[in-house]
Each structure stands twice: as C-alpha cells, then as structure tokens.
Image 1 (cartoon, one colour):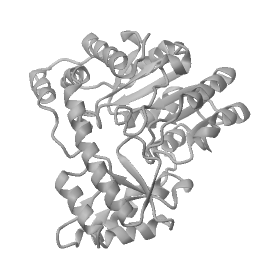
Image 2 (spheres, helix red, strand yellow):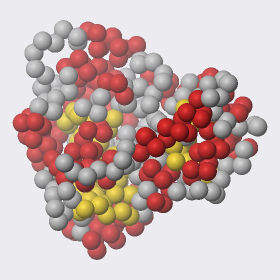
Image 3 (cartoon, one colour):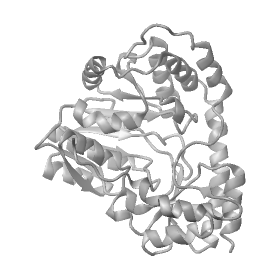
Image 4 (cartoon, one colour):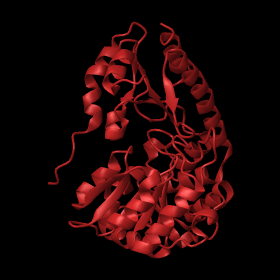
Length: 364
C-alpha cells in the first residue's frame, strides 16, 4: 500500500464543530460541492436513459463524443479534435489520481505540479510511485527543461486561487515539453467560470498551433452543470495518448454508466443552464467579496473559478478559527501546498441564503 498523506479535510473537523455551534447554523464555504439543482433537461435525460440493462461503451457513445467536440468548438474555440479522441471518465478526480499510473509512470519518473494546487495531483504521483516536483506556474517551462519531468500538470483557472494562465505562459510550457518529450495535462474544469479575464484552453490554436501531440485536457461537468453526483467528465487531446488510456480503461472496467452518458450528452449540448448557473455564482461572488474586503481581507488572484483566495496576512489556521467563531467554515490554504499557508479558500458554492448569512456575520 502506497503511503499517502492524511486526507486534509479530516483536519477541519474541530473548526467545523465550532462553526456548527453558531445560533443560526454553519455556513460551509470549505468545499466546492454544488448546492443548486441539477438542470431539468439533464434530469430528464437521465430518466430517459435509465432502462440500460447492457454494458455501456468504455469509449462513450458516438453522440456523447460528438457533443464534447461541439462544446469544445462552440465554447472554447478549440478546433481539430476528432470524436475518437474524446474519452469519458468517471469524474475527473478519478482520472487525475490514476493518470500517472495509466501513463505507466513509476519509480525514477517525475510529475510536475503547481506550488499551490489541488492535492490529488500529488496523490496521483504517489500512487504511481513517481516523484513530485513543485513549481510556480510561471516557472514551469524552466523546470521542464532543467528537471525533465515525464508529466506536467497545469490548472487554469486554478484551484484554489483562481489564477488564469496567459497564452504566452501556456505556449512556453508547450514548447519546453516538446523539447523534452513531457506530457502536459491541463485541468480545465473551471474554464467557463471566468470573471475578470478569459481563460484559454491548452488545445486552443493560439497555444499549441493546432497540434495536440503530447497534450491532454481534462473537463468536468461537476461545476458547469451541477453534476458532481453524476461523476461526469472527459479527457481529450493527443489521439495516441487517448487511445492508450482507452485500452487500459477497457481492461480495468473503468466505464461511465450509460444513463450518465446520456445525461452528459444533453448537458454538453445545452448552454442555457450553464449560463444561468454562472450568473448565480456571479451574484454570490459579489456579495462574498464585498463582505470579506469590508472585514479586512485581501483577495488575491480569483480572476475565475469558484473560490475567493483570501488573506488577512496571518497564518491560515488563525483565519480559519476566526471565521469559525462566526459560524463560517473555509479551507486553509495549507491544504494546497506550503505556498498557501497565509491564505484561505472561500467557496461560492452555498445557497443565496447562506451566502447572505455569511456576509451579515462578517459585519461583526
């Protein structure tokens, strides 16, 4: 059994208990789980596909893969992806955790991850027995050339801090990876949730000149369509890499259930519900940001995504405790790496009523 770090959210239990003692109840802004309803069109698609007695296709239905290609072109301006190069995954966390293993990385190989990052990038390297190299995103190209990792993780817009990588930065990473033979994977699950700048996909022609060799992107419907409970996402990019992943996943039985494939197809083809959800998050973001800044917080980055990267220029657990005394639970930046120890992550994923309650409490 691989030695893994303790599950970070277990350490929040005392703060959660303290916040839960507030007379008006807890406002939990610590995790990015959706709280709004699954769109009606998606629910209907799930019901319509529920009579599914046979085994589903590991590669996904042709309709699902075509819907993903259409969404990439329509929403992200990504051209040149063939449906055969789309592979559904059972929630993107599963893929993130197992991708180094699926790519046959192991002892002596290295995986590069951002210095403030989703913890599962590191967990995936550990599961494969590979080493982890930590780098600031703007220094990733230099690290690729000097340390030669086999796999490089990008995350733009980033969790936890909402930073968006520029086209120049992405192009630099792609150039360095092509010199050294590294695989670059961009986790883009927040890419439609832009507030202050427009994120660009790794597969966009401005970044990769229309060549997808050595590149993969990961997309999730958990945030866009409130489908965290459906475990619906996909990976696409380099046709050879996707074909290799498909082959392993066939042997391992990693298959998205057929009713979820049907629901995902509809969700990818419908932009109206995604825009409605984005507007909900926009309103909540305005309320929370104004309340935090009035209370003396500084918001760093946070140009996109579902979080406000907030600091009072103190150790993050002091901030967690200060907020817990007011019935508000947030995630300490330490969960995301040593570079995050003076920040907390404040999620927008609470109801309008709970966000309003948090704003009122921050006045005191």
